[in-house]
Every structure is written in structure tokens, then in C-alpha cells.
Image 1 (cartoon, rainbow, N blue to C red):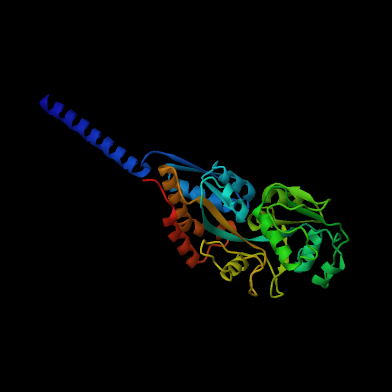
Image 2 (image 1 turned 45 degrees about the vertical axis):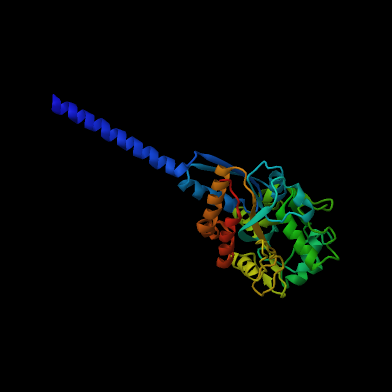
Length: 350
């Protein structure tokens, strides 16, 4: 009887100790408990963001990250109002808009780069080259037929139909639009007169889609359509992609290697911004988009600030390795090092 009682007491003690150790192990991971971070913005980088967030969640169950997309313009507006903890964007805030950010100074964390493809749908044409000025004229609706002499000159020997061209573009404020129009403005400001911004006043008769997927859908469903779409969504939609004339006069396909070459030849600024549009180099794809995660330098919530720093660290430790599989070019090693070092600039309450 005494032996049975002793064994029972010993069992209770062991179970109690195991429960205590389990609780200690759990609390060491979650710290002050579960945390939710919200982000919105760029659809161009969303495929990469979603893949990185999923991988992060697998090893950080106490941190939930939601990323809504909505376009770079939406992400920047949401961050201005402090409706989100971070914004994804392919375009930089304009200097005049910086005072609108209620949380103060911003930090720019570069993530990945990728080609902005010129996707098209033209029966019987599986290969297409477009010079920079021809492209500007098409999107300015100054070239309206696929058998136009300018397109024919870019594609000697090709059999081009007289199909009408339907220009597809973004309906929402978009970093993809900003970078694409930046290229058109750089190579042919005479024909392209709409400038460069997240939104522009497109010519009548063009069609608008929401997000990169929306533009891809228009191109996919419309014979004679042409639009600008990130590589990830263009690949998902199985669109035909044109080769575009770069700064050296070479026609370059929208590949990850071409995007990486554009980034490599770009100047990296002290705040980790850079511009790979129309970058020099024979191998550079000329319409390459950068991407960033924007956050406030001064974090006001300890738990959220710590979680945000943990996520950003993961982006550079693990996320970059997911880039190629999701149709993005990873950052050069030296830029990754600079971005990792910038994490020390996040000010988190004690």
C-alpha cells in the first residue's frame, strides 16, 4: 500500500514537472504571446511575399502576418494612416508625400526584383520583338494595328496580322505602372507624353484591370491585346512575352537573369533605394522592377516591432532563397548584407 502511494506521488510529480517544462518552452518562443502584423500594397511582389510569409509561419507560429495586396498606392496610403505595420511597394514615396506618414521616418527594405513583362495575345505570333520607341507608341495609342510598319521593322520576316491592338493597363495605383511608364518616359518622351506615376491618364479605348492578375486576364482573354504584367502572373497565365530593346540596342527577353543583370548595374543609395529601369549592360532587361517593404523607423509597440524585425530578418535569411522558384530575382549578396545591417536602425521600445 505504501509502495503504491509512493509510486502515485512520484507519477504526479513527474507529470507536474513535465507540464512546467512544456510551459517554459512555449513561453520562450512566444514571449509576450501571439502577435499579428498587417501589410498591404504591391501585387507585383505578392507571390514572393505570400511564399515567404507561408515559410515564416511554419517556424513562427506565434506571429501571424496578413498581406492584402491592393497595389503599391494602396499600401503606401495604408502605411501613411498607420492602418498597417508594413507596406509592399515597387515605387518610392514622392518627397511631397513624406509628411503624410504619421509614424515619421521610413526605412526601405529591398526584397526582390523581377521583369515587368510586355505580355501579348496575337494568334499565329509566338515570338515578338519590340524596340523601345515602338513600345512607347503602342501604349500611347499612336500605333493601333499589329501589322504597323514599325512593328514589322522590329520583326523582319514575321507574318503580322492586321488585328487591332488593345492596350491593357492597371486600374489601381501601381508601382508596376510607375516603373513601366518611367521606362516609356525615358526612352521616348516625344511620343509618350503622360509622364510617370502610380496612375496616369490613359487614352480612351484602352482597358483597365485591377492588380497584375487583372491585366493578365485582359491579355489572356482578348485577341490583339498587349499589357504590362509581372513575370509571376504572366507565367501563371501562360502569356506570350515580347523581347524588349535595352539601352545597348539588344533585344532582351524578360528573364530572371536579365533582371539580376539590371540590378547589378544599378547604383544603390544610402537608404537602400535604387533604380534598375533602363539600366546599362548588354544583358540587362530594361523594364526591371525593384521592390521594397516600407516600415516606420520608430516602432511604438514592443511586441509588434520585435515581430516585424524577426520577419524582416527571415526575409534575408530564408526568403531570398525562395525568389527564383516564384519567378523573382534574388538580391545580390552585398545588398542583402546592407539590408540586414539596416535592421539595427529599427527603434523598438524597451
